[in-house]
Image (cartoon, rainbow, N blue to C red):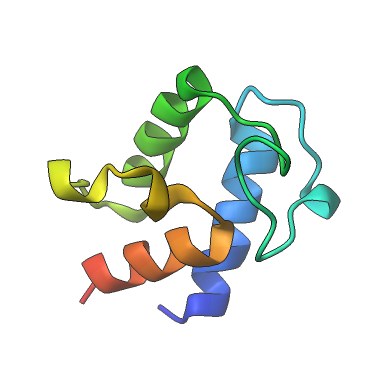
Amino acid sequence: MSQETVINRLKDVISQELDANITREEIGNDTPLFEEGLGLDSVVLVELISLVEKEFGIKFSDDELRPESFSTVKVLADVVTGKQG
């Protein structure tokens, strides 16, 4: 699966399935997911991890559950793409 496809699917998950009231148009590839960006919090992050694992059929290891892995959609897409081999 290409990185562009993963990015688009991640944007769909965030805008449609995450309980965060964020539109797809608000999500840039390099927009921070937390704080000054989309403003996601730790509760929403847990939901996002679960949704991404389900959407892509992957499991995050403890080492991958670092804030850096979820900093932007592009970074998260890199992690997901890497897990898919």
